[in-house]
Length: 185
Length: 375
Image (tube, rainbow over all chains, first blue to last red; front, side, top):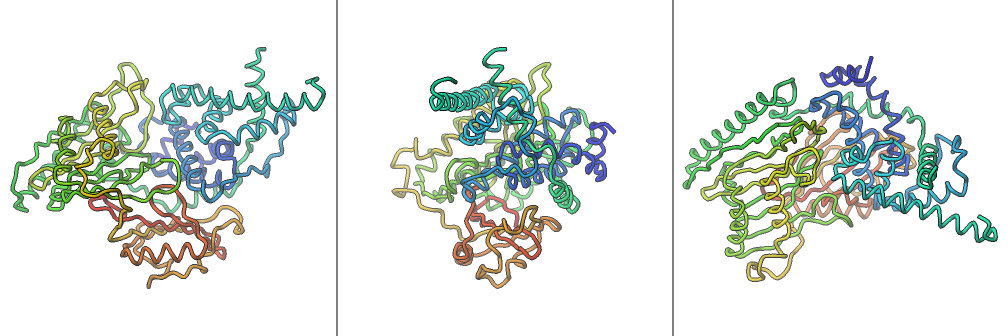
């Protein structure tokens, strides 16, 4: 059954269709939440909350073809809420590679990974969200603006500055590595 | 390949490597457990405008009819209450399309004697409903809550008192817009040929107390003039600017408008205590402070306080407590080591129930006059 049909059935109250719909999107939601929140436990909660809000608010979705965009917005909001709720309790969020080891990214060196990790952690929540939506989910900038509920200019600015910061982190690391290697990098 | 492309590829590869390919089963299971016990609670207005396919015209007509009935009932009520003064001139302007998410059900004109003390109540809109921003009462009290999402630690509501002249200056500021003497809702108007994205939540709202003890409500949506989907809407812009002014009274009112020297922490007469219990998806070792370690000071225990307002998972209970009782609850929770979160201006604590792998969230909301609560 295609997603549109599942959305329509779930919207009308079909719980079985809703379960199938949730199962079809949960992996993507969870992966996105993990990247934005950098914490598996927070991502658990944000993903659960998104699914519950989908169920609760699905009757208000007028156009089933808009489901994906609507879903993204709910997820971004749930991640934002979860991040705020736990900011004080968990000042140091950690991402443990519990489920997936870092494989299959031979194009990224270990040093790059470390540099990106450090740079990514230093980004604000909003900047991380913009980067994940644009560079991981592959959303266009207007779609990023729509998902985050900000004007297009703000979305562009967030992606631009976050990317600059990550690039700077990578280049600083490369310079450091070059110096330790006698400037050969 | 350019340097930019190289960097983008590196970043995208790294992000992909960091993203789990599969969600743990417990996430979907826990979410569906919660959904299984959750009914779709839809407001009377949302049932009317959002449930079945209707044309825009039908929706507008439905909303207009409902608001008109509400206003008529309000007028009759105000008449029955023998309130003297001019009747409101409610001409709800439901401009353009109504949307799936426009649900001003919790923001009806309060045409009752209680409105006699209200000058204004301003609420912000969010995905999950409205939140309090500012209330001004005729006795001069100004109760302000930090906007949701304000950076920094939790900020409790604070209170100042205006002189009668100060209250009049606030009224003048509202009247100057020409938009606050009648109830109205300003929905976004899509640009021609543009299919706007769905939007959730409710708009901002302003309730204004008029002479004679009646009140009008104005709701609107505003996402900036540069929004690519919706027409610029002067009314929404003017109301947004007014809302900004009402949240920053201290910046523009003269010092003589204030009856006191500085803001004080708002001292509520009551707290609304909301207790939510939901399944914990992670390890019990990660649960917060165990609830049994809290020396709960109220007669009804944590698991029995208040009335159930949502059964199932999460179960939510809600009850009112006096200021003294609320302070005792906060003290007991902090003594046990529970840390308040800074989600909103409410104090919210989390506890654990390790034996049954559940998490309890206890939220203390200061009761603000005229602001509706869950119990």
